[in-house]
Image 1: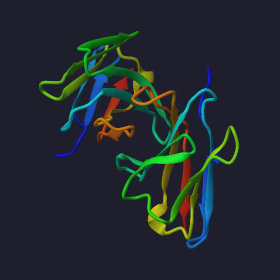
Image 2: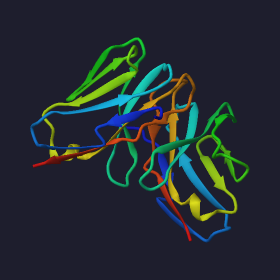
Image 3: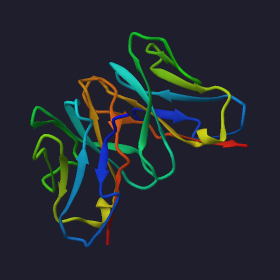
Image 4: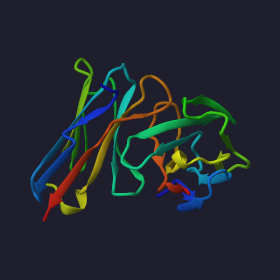
Length: 110
Length: 113
């Protein structure tokens, strides 16, 4: 498998529900970042979590990082239709480049 | 809020032609990047640029590609002799430092026909 793989590949939920997406990676990292991409649009930076951090919050987003398992999760609470997008994790693998995962396509139904 | 801007948003070019994709990074950022995303695939790293030189490049970034920071604000990606498989969304990004948040532009959709 490749560096940065998200699961599930696709997720459909109702507005108001929580959405959890997971990311696994292979190499050691300095940090892990989560991005959102609306269809055919640019990448919007959501949150960065450093390798010495275990959890980080930003508004309705909660990110966890488990370096022993080489995994991270992104939780979006009280989802809205506007949260419909693809979500990607990206790791730095101790370099200055980002390695992106395959992404989770989130669909939030009103 | 400062943002990375890219022009053009769409570019259609004939196979074999040269294209230049332009980016204006966030003004106080020091690291600049190009990534690409072929339709339906992962975002792939192409090149990073710091202190007026390439700091890292991927296998994709061969002699067909070059980058330049011609002045204090622009950062360009030149693709020579374009091929059909160069069709993709190209993203520019910038960051303040090594291992910090990278902010992306809206992308240039390049179509080679």
